[in-house]
Length: 640
Image 1 (tube, one colour):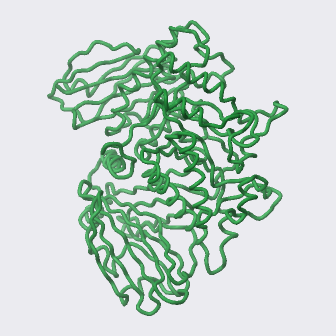
Image 2 (tube, helix red, strand yellow):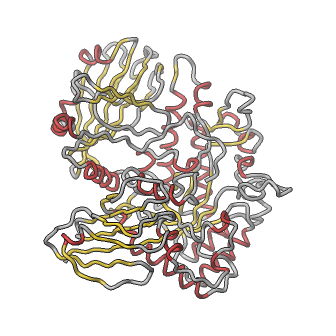
């Protein structure tokens, strides 16, 4: 969550998905036939490009030695195509993954390896996707160039790292960005997006018992706080049987950190970011370490997440002093003083050392979740570390090392979950999605309730495994108000339900109360609130349809549908925003059988409402009236 450096040079992306509509329909149909065909990987048709020794790959591959292998994997079939230069023995391998359950999808990574005995000629302008409608995912810096062809029917795409100009030493190997393409034909873009969403759930999401992982109900606290306060809070949760699942400790638990994230009036303030690199529990706040906190949570059956930013260290802190060779410096300038360092994960010793450090924390502290943050602009470190004949190598090494670090942690700690933070949502690419969950999807925060709705709607197709936060009890500190559990209520008001429900997503962050609170009415209410979220959460793994256009207008409404065709049921959430003058809208849900009968519940509060029957044709044009602004309602439907 903490943010101090905007990542101006890093442009992460989960997966860009470019699809054909209208005039592009003929092209998309052609791709549907050829996308997974071996013909795509013939030297004269490969979808990638590079320059080698000053020559374009298109001029070279036809004379290189080729080989094709077929491998099996748990997720599908891997086709391995290799192209070897007979003169220098540079070997280019395309590892191509096909999914039987998604026949129009292809996923590939390129690897370049020097199998010769001397350095290769310069290898540059490596574009693992070139000339196709498609997708890219890379956790570093990337570019995507689009060209609209003169025939008026074709858009070509070339994509890869921003800059590559490098030679490879004997035995050295590098990889490219992962490319994932999905063909689609038809006239409804939302159907293609839901096919893509299903692909993500099936093959690019951490799994639990063969199903995409369910997000947690989370509560937490700041790191710079006495462990006694945290233990008292956890005991209160235990005593009142609040059904939360994960407790998260944010930054500031280490070194000499003192005070809140922004606490300049505190005479002892020593902010979290100045102490990065002193990775040991603060003796002020954790005199006996952090293990007692993890043990208490384990005893109560609650998971434990801890914030760490291992890729960053201040140059005066212990880890940087002990291991200066692990870190990169950036050039000193007036606007960017050289006080923070970036770990060089391309250095095997640095990667191994930081992996071991985090792994030991996981074991010693009893962590079940690991929250990795990243508040750096890495280009300012990577570029100066490159030599003229190795441009791009530092970035490639770092990104490969990052993936290796996470894979090693997941292998060492079965069942571990990783929360991918990165200044809030700045590493949402497909490689990271396949290994993690996004708890803190943006540093913009959740107190802008219109922005939170916009984020939920926009991310649903691209990053379905992410968390929303309710803004009723969570937002009191920023609205100069008293927490609701300090008052008698009423709690179930249209505005409060609106603020609670707009945070529903694959995971849910809540403020359930505080140590010492003696308010039975509040306890009963927050339990009811969490129970409703748990009831609706499974629907968020269905197909998603925004029933109204994307908008951040306070006068608009929000209307979302999650449809589950396998079980013939679904959910709609309707939100009337704070300044909306409209008291009624007609919602038009998708994929209903007009002749079928549906059981429908329209629920305004937390109490279940009467179920009534209606034909699909009636449900497809359903008037909804919300008399107050803001307010909300949920609509459950099931085909009989």
